[in-house]
Image 1: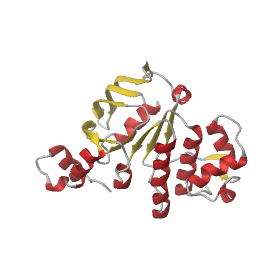
Image 2: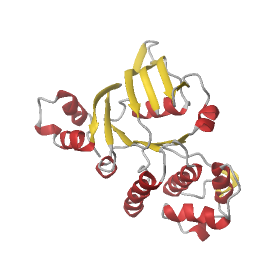
Image 3: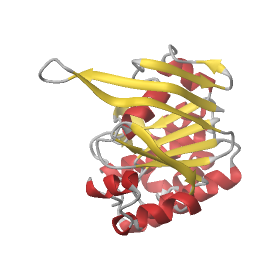
Length: 250
């Protein structure tokens, strides 16, 4: 179980004044749940994902994982504890093949056919990719799918995806939905996805809405999604209206 308690994150702006990116965010992610986080661009969603992964440290507040305070833990320690993180812009590794990367992610030696299965699940023809280097020859969409395959190979307690649909073509996006549905169905772990896409939000057990650094709404997809889709026609729901005024769902 993941728990954020009163987490805030501030940075200094160009005028040397503090700017709040996250303000006193608290929530619990239960085991084996699929949770989506949405909201306007610049609202603090990606920052929160990076704080969970340990890439950034909160200015205030605490983070607990399986009941243990991991606030000061490094990215490596959190990874060892069972937290995976997929970047919005995946990292490239010159000289490392896709097969090498999947083996590293799995933390053990896996067969060629096993590695190929992960690639097939994310819509890549295994024979065309298994021996390719993870370098600039791969497109952004290809990199994204390879990174998702590595997260699947890790099979951790918590997998965090930051806008996995970014840079993915329509056919691949449809396949991606099935990947996440299968992950949720077959794996015993929690999934946390940052996304604007209705199809992904509609797959989640629960939706959290982050706007202006604050958690403004939380509930099941049946409770939250209709309000987001109809926010423009619901002026009394000021939190949701603010989301639409700042960009809404893409």
